[in-house]
Length: 205
Ligand code: GAR
Image 1: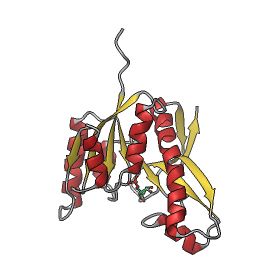
Image 2: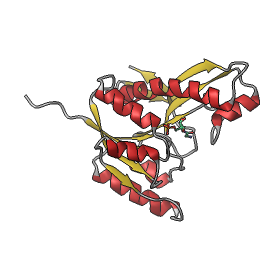
Image 3: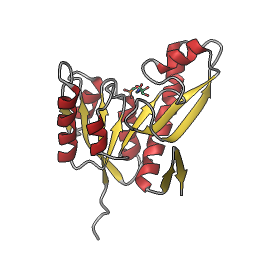
């Protein structure tokens, strides 16, 4: 009997890569099933996450974005992802806004994780934004990517309390631990196909 085909994930990252490593571990340990990481692509040549992917013998690519017009850079990203036969694009700390052309190339097939309970605190430094605003609940959101920043349909959120002594660093660390639970769970849900989207609502089937 031939093994069932695995869905192919394309991971995009710009930095440390802890979400990528956590997803890779989840696949390796069987917590996340039915998929494989087919490529890891970074827009930053010396991103530690890219080196970590290389060390794990994964296929890596660098497509530098600095100084390149967005449309041109994204066209290269889309071509690379298509070449690797990617079924689902996973943004894991990929700190670039995607062009509409990129998003249309993978309709409802791009996931992002953001370190806040969207729609609160989109954009950069979400954890510090939550702290400065005086939020008492923080967390993370996994969502489909649409043409507005940090805006698409929410697949899953995890919430934690903000503690009195929290700094941006301590809050970020505790949110990151939730991200590492949320992202593999959300990917598994999306890969299963057992959901419908009604308006902005993700409904599990
Ligand atoms: C994570 O906290 C992720 O939620 C955030 O960047 C960090 C990447 O960490 N993403 C965004 O803010 C996207 N708007 P990692 O490189 O260790 O996965």
